[in-house]
Length: 253
View (cartoon, rainbow, N blue to C red):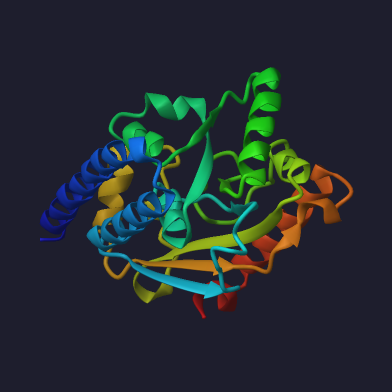
């Protein structure tokens, strides 16, 4: 029975992804930012519901005005992370160029306005930093997973600092965000991670879960230029996010 439910949810997830891609393609030529944001917001709500998960948002209240020229920095656990963050706000994400090789998912990622980076090319990094800084200066909100890859959610891996330079160039506000996935009996839902497994397997493992709860905790923002350099900024963000993640009351209150 649980497998049947998982496959039905999978059909709903794939259908919502297809609708998202089609909708973005149709409205993209009109450059209607508000409409695009509302479409993505509706889509994320539908997709999260399709998984059977319940979303809980805690912490610092977010407003569209405050989020202009801002970066949202988070730990990275699941294939659902970007969907969850898009539920909070219209976030442009920075992703590794290898994501363009992912079947099905790559179309959704591209439709979401992801900025791709070749992490092995330092010249590309400089160009992307300037591109991201320009977006921030023009009022965008950019999302970043500085661990560089997903984890099993046991803890928060060390952060990679280079892209944080864009926030310093643009004098941006940075919001630390903590993501946590829990299943029955408040146990950490390791199934949502795609460490050492394929995307399809991870999705089906996620959809089989009962009572999945996605906790999002938004911590108070800091200004990028309040720190001497991007390394000290990165260390601070890692410390805050890691400490909050390890505190049960922070992610499950």
